[in-house]
Image (cartoon, rainbow, N blue to C red; front, side, top):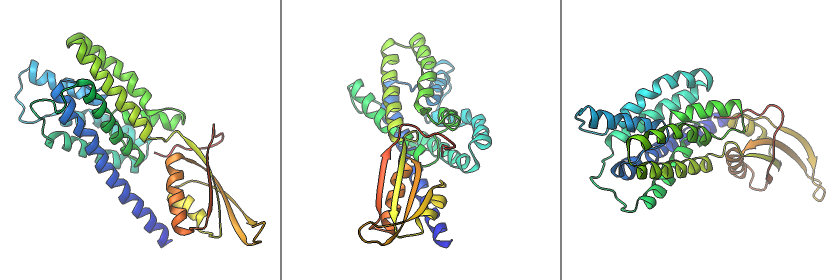
Length: 293
């Protein structure tokens, strides 16, 4: 039991480290690349950017720092309740930490007076890839960046085939419509390019909806505890015999998400380097298969 607790503690620290890195990677491209170009993101962050622009340009409210993170944090407060009630306390606390870190990075990272990269298309590609990977890393670590991520994860829990990025594109349409009316058409187009790239990168990094079947043949009886305790999944196992060696083995079968399968393979190799592991994609999983957030 103590060994299980140690594994779980190591996984938690690894996740929190990933959340910290993901929050930085998500916020940095905004301050360093897109904000100097006057571009907006098609999500709740973009809405916070628009509110910031209205406060500074229309109402002439002086700002000593970029207040996008503070506005974003305030907009997330109602969604914290949804995360707490529907997505679990652990997910809620991780999301609260993530949004706090994101708001902090938005506030302390400097905004250069001019764009770091002159070409707007190149800027959109780089910023979108980095920011999207950061958001996907946060999701893979069992948290979210708040905002649309919470809504997307809630929909994913209700429908395992739902991609988190889909709802991002839906809400993005309304933000881009606003940009098209009040700003130049070029701003709307490049903002859309940035959002599409970041959404694509996020869904690639967070492959929660990719299902895998895993078969493990090992002499270790601890593999079952590893699946149930570390991954909080179930498995079926039986005792088999090697056809050539006639040695006794345990045969485990489980259905996992892609990143869970990769974690399991790494952990099994540490416990039993001689284990035989088969991992393959599956088209669909019927029955009760909960989406772990």
